Figure 1 (tube, rainbow, N blue to C red):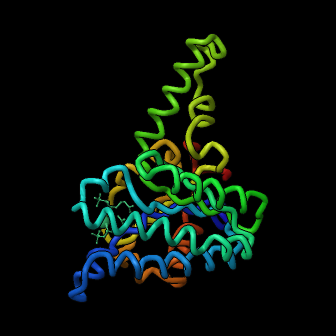
Figure 2 (figure 1 turned 120 degrees about the vertical axis):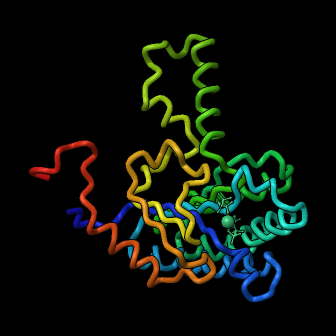
Length: 238
Ligand code: IPE
Ligand code: IPE
Ligand code: MG
């Protein structure tokens, strides 16, 4: 039985829209409420000494939503990032953003780079936010980089190993997630961290993201501690 808590928790924060619709409110109201849940879970992970937290904020498929929701949601994401930057820094949190930021323009790109730079040396919690992220996008990028390396002869075919791929993913600096949580009741991974979750423990909870709190996190951690992670071994003598 693992006696330790996960070093890396990854979360698909799902259910904002339904949470709002059930209250007769617009979906963006749910996304705003979702930001509060993010603050709470970041604090809770910090207090529990979990060193890595990765959050799925906007997927590469979320562009398929109505234009207005996409506009408001991406605006909310980047204004929150900007307004929370100093607080994150004061709390010793290192922030990384993964995903394709090119559609958002130069200003957003600069802001993200500045916040990453500001918080680079922080050690309390590594917070990674996935924006316009897709697991397939991540793997395809790694393949492209390897192809370029092969073409310019800095990588031979025999050097195309699992480590070579993992080292070119956007999460190359992070350990693989130990615990993968999805809120909102759906039992799917929706193109999040596909390569990285090969051996993650999965935890699905019906709670909609705006209602995800410390007790839900503890429920997930409790479930995680009961798992026997075998990584292909027989289970005897672990
Ligand atoms: C998750 O909530 C947040 C994002 C995908 C950005 P949803 O907006 O998917 O909420 P539901 O699943 O429709 O309730
Ligand atoms: C996954 O949720 C993406 C994020 C939470 C950012 P979705 O609500 O977009 O996923 P599907 O459409 O239910 O698979
Ligand atoms: Mg959803």
